[in-house]
Image (cartoon, rainbow, N blue to C red; front, side, top):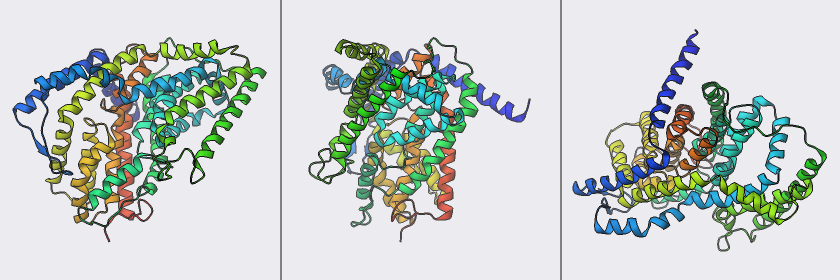
Length: 508
């Protein structure tokens, strides 16, 4: 046995232990219910020890909220329904899958998959999926609800393990969250928070939304390459042959009716795209923000889920008419109904996950942990590259208990941007270091909003899968992305490259 084989064997053994430990836990829904109960108990403990902290941004004292109090009991009882119905991923998934159900029911998705599998070189399939996942971050819901499950189906149709495709897409969508060739909604959001923090030192300082663009552009190709390597060298060998119940889509050549259906669907999509561009390209376009004329904060970006529904639905109906797979409106509704039938376990899981996330937010425990972690790093007295690497690791750790990128940055920016400015580092540089840490642990953090959805997707192909399966499958991506991104980051520092338009590493 070679050293490489021994190394792979060691990695496989470690990941198998992680998976067994994770899957030895109760059903994910039961686990989230237990987490919710644990948060209630911890809120009482934290309140008894008065674990208060001062918010670095507002100066206000943040105290733990006791959910075992009368007021806490009232919140739990009165907000149980709204916790569930307002859980962000739930509506996104339901609405998106209604449209996707039409496209799947009429046969459009199957035909497209066959076309992709038959026309794409097998050796490039993994790279294309990871790369597409990274690009989908411009509107992240698209990646989670469309690309991740689609990648599993594509891999299955290509004769490969579907969970490998799912993992590759999830790694790109979530692990590569801060890499992209385009600016997304998170860029102006983080830039605004960075600007406010920088003005603690310099009242005239402004961070523009494209401040990290050069680094993020280069990161796109690095993450896509690393994600491909992990999938091919670690994940696929570990998963082995797929022996589940799901059957691959037929990969027979398209018949004339199916080709006509694809032509109709293409025409429908082009018309929809023309409608979208007509609303975005003019300065006063009907899909832009009516007050500012912006695109990033526009009805289009806010309504991206509606466009997923409309594009999938219209294309699916057009395909069905062309391929003669639908005869009336009942066939369309049947496809939508069938897509909802597959979500039973996910809805149960989301109910308990939503309660857990809500309780965690109410208690302020995540906020307290984040502020204490930031304070610890601040007092360590490091400088230069070691300081920035430690900052990345702290951001990655905090991401395990607090999912929102903007919420974490709202806490950390007022502490670290002024501190690093005084050490000679620009706010843009500090922001890009934060974004690396914030991205790499998304795929192993149960606090990530779409984590429960990923568990549900995996259980379609492995009924015994649980949180341990997700974490053990994604952990190699998380570690590899962290190492690769830190190396790129160090190279950027040593070469003193700008990280975005007009944004250097060091203060003038």
